[in-house]
Length: 230
Image (cartoon, rainbow, N blue to C red; front, side, top):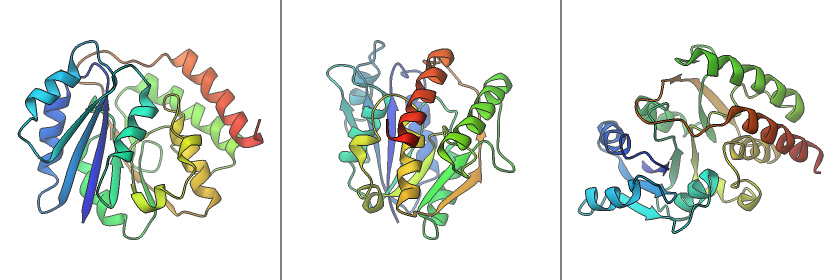
């Protein structure tokens, strides 16, 4: 099994080292690489990662010279990956690395594995965020005519060969809305999608970058454009 784990960072100096160490615990006997793409952090996350992982050949660090955005950082990590499977996850510990082995096992049977908050057994520790996101997911399901329960989670596993069949330039821009675009285009070529229960934890350190009012408005417009090809 080969796996590239993509970690986009912005001001995550207090989380990233702990996260990488935690991820490695679940990758024993697996051929892996961890790819950190820092989006020109203000707290020197990228420079600290370069220093910390300078001698660690399993960790690759890429620095954006100027801020390009969350989705573009993920895309840069994907383009620089070398393994057959890809996992994308957030770097604030909301996505628990404990799911990685299960995702890899199931990826031999399904094309896309999603760590889902809203399938049976999944939930979020941040209850306010959970309710807002849940109702917004219902709206996305109506607009996009999808059966996926969690269209915004962004914790997923897919093979690079299948990802290369998708129109990546139409997917990886903006913020978290890239994920429902990815799922939308995946459904168009009949890729199989499996949601497994995930516990989304509260951010351990630092501040969230999410502006929910702006995000929900932006995502709504993007979903309409996607559905009706506006």
